[in-house]
Length: 453
Image (cartoon, rainbow, N blue to C red; front, side):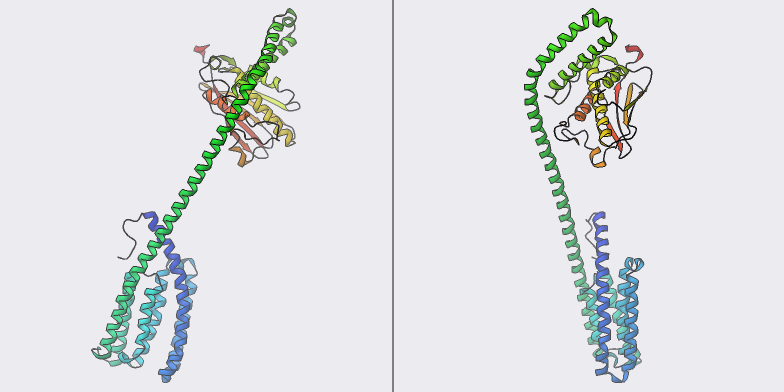
């Protein structure tokens, strides 16, 4: 067996091969430097055993060392790193070739240098991440080099004696190295697999932690909403009574001849009544974090979006003073829904835009409002040229209690309620922004077609 177990997923196998290549590269470089040191230190062995060949052997050792050094340089480049197995095999064979030549020119089969061949075979199994077939190939080539060296020395095919003994020892080394290589490879893969499983478990743990954090946030939000509902229940009783008195007084005033004869007074009283209605809606709907339940009569009523927009602009007139409001509306803006709730949405969007532009000291502040038909829906766009919304906040603007205002200037419920209102009208409130340039909110409402009018 020369690779990972067959049941391994292709993704894990690919990751293992990539990791193994880096492992081989590190060890091959280190082993190559070690080989250079051992080859050069062998000059002392040459001096002790074969002083007559010292010059030739020293030159051979230097040349082999330089060749290995060149391979180290190649492995530092991308091509060499990709072919690290071939590079490692090449530099391992260079000392084997050198030793075989030394055996041929000295004592042949009786030369003690055959031990160096064994060392090379063992090193490939113990120190390097070779595959089993690569180690067997190295052992076979080493034996052939040894046999060729003995043949050259003797002038005839070697048989028996020292050659037979050394051949057996080389065979034992090759077999033992192949076994070591096999189990080393399995151990490396098992370790990598464990590391991969540990990484997966850590990723799952992080995902679970994030889920727990989200659940904790949801529970905290539920607690806030429960507290808000308790507060709203008390506000209902305390606020609705004076609001009802105001509504009654406005209705009576609207019936007075003086109010009917004065267009300005009639308009002011109408706006005041709309404002009182909005107070009722806001206070009552805080209990359920919405305006009214879907399916109510308010949401099936028909109204002109243009009229709702004009009411909104008048109601926030003090907030948008000095800001140019440009209207780009199509002729027919008759839609179906809760007019008071849509006015509340527009008021929120206009006041937020005005506040952002004042806070950002926008030059030439302006708000553009578009309304255009898209099939059976009327698409509305509210765009300002203010400082925009930062990327980290754009995804949170519809979260309950999220606000960038100062403490005491709002609960951060406005856009969340607006989102719920548009959702109950079958649409979606979306936000886009380019920091430092503009912010745009879009939503759509159901149009009233010709057959429904």
